[in-house]
Amino acid sequence: MLDWKAIAMSLKFLGKSTTGNQSPTLYLGDSDYVVQGWRVTDHPELIEIPHALLAYLEAGTCLGVVLTDTGHGTFTLTGEPIRDPDVLAEMDIPDHEAGVTVPVGQEIRPDVAASR
Image (cartoon, rainbow, N blue to C red; front, side):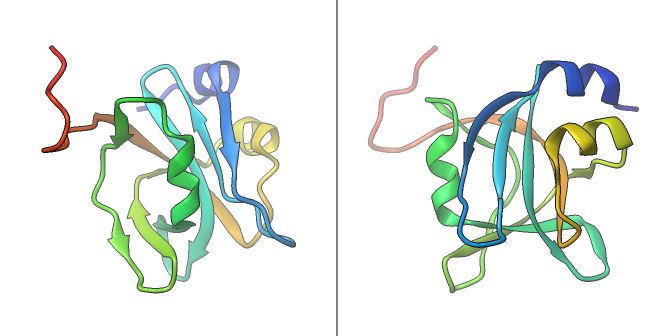
C-alpha cells in the first residue's frame, strides 16, 4: 500500500500543459511519477494526457508504463489511482481529471549510448 501522506509531502512540480479549463500536470515523487490527466469514463486507473506533458520528464527517464497513442495528440496510460483527500487537495484536481502514480522508467533509446 502506498504511503499517500509521504507522497503529498514529497511532490516536486515538473510542469503543466494548460489550455482553458484543462490542467494535465506532471510531478515527481520519491520513487514514482504522479501524473494528472483527463478521466477516462468507467476506468479510474486510466487517464489521458497531451503529448506535450512528456517534455517535463526528468532527463534520462520515462514513464514506466505503456502509453497508448490516441491519434489526436494525446496518450492514455494506467497507474495506481490517487484517492487520498490530502494529496488530491494539494494537487487541486478538477472533477473532470484524475491523478495516478506510475513508476519512473529509464529512457533507453537506440540513438543514445546506455549510461551505467
